[in-house]
Image (cartoon, rainbow, N blue to C red; front, side):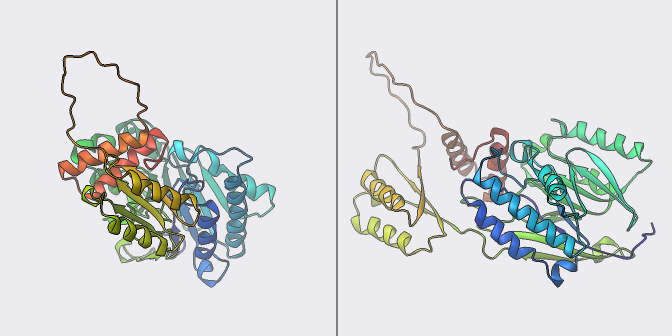
Length: 385
C-alpha cells in the first residue's frame, strides 16, 4: 500500500488516571507538562494518541481535581497547536473516564485554542488524508463479550470497504496478558494483528510491554503499591515506505513518577521494640513523596500500628496500613449458642483475600497485578481503599 506522506512520528500515552486517590492530580499534571512542553522535541511529533483512562473516576464539576485537569488540558492543547501536533483521545474504561475526556474537544472550542483534536467515544474508523491512513478505535467494553466486539469490528471494516487498517487504538486486555482460564474475556491478538498493518496502541494494563506489533504503553505515573516498574509513554518514529518492524520505538520514562514502598511486619517482631523503631526510623528517613504501605498482623501488632498511625497523622508521610488476615482459620464448635456481631466486608478485604490465594497458587506478580486491576475496573474502586 502506498502512503501520501513517507514519515509519521507518533506518541502514545494512556492510563493517566487524573483524580486518583493515591497521587495528587496536580503532581501528575506537572509531570505531563514536563513530558510535553512546547519545544522542538514536541514538534518532532505528528500525532499524539491517548488510548483511554485520562481520568480515574467520575468527578463533580466543583472538584479541585477537575479544575487542575482542565488547566492542564488547555496547556497541553496549546502546546500541540503551537507545534502542529494532532491529538486523538479515545474513551477508556467506562468506570474511569465516564465520558469526561470529551473535555479535550469542549475546552479546545471554548478556550479558542483551535488544536487538531478529536474525542472518540465509540467503535469507529478514521481516515487521515494527510498520510492516507485508516485508524481503528476500539474503546473498552464496547460490548460485554469480546467475541461480539470482534464481530462489530468486522462489520465496521466491511462498511468502510476495508479488510485492514493501518493503526488501531484499543483499551482492554489480550489473551497473552491474563491466565488461560480468563482468555474468554480478552481480545485475541492474532485477530487484531491480522487486520492492522502497522501498530496497535493498547491501554488498560499499567505495565509497559510489547508483543509483536502490539504496544502497551503502561500507566504514565505510578498509582499504587506494586507498580514499581518504570512509567512513562511511548514514541514511534516511522518511515511508512518500510515495514512497521523497522520503526524506531522509544520508551520515554517518567523519572519523577510517584515512588511507592511496601513493608511487611513479621509476627515475631511484635515484641521486638528495636525492629519496630527501625521500621519507623526507615519510614521517617524516606522522601515525603514516597507512598508507604505496611502490612501487619492485627493479632500481634497493636502497639506498632498505633505508632504508625500517629506518624501518618503527623502529615509528613502517607502510610497505608493493611491487616494480613490469617490463612486457614476455622471456628471450632463448642456446643454453646453463640451470637455473632455483623462485620463489614470491604472491597479491600476481598482484594486482600484474593491476593493471598494467588500467592498460595503461585501466580506470578505481574499477572496478579493484572487480575486485581481488572477487579478494580469492574468494581470502580481501588483495592488499596
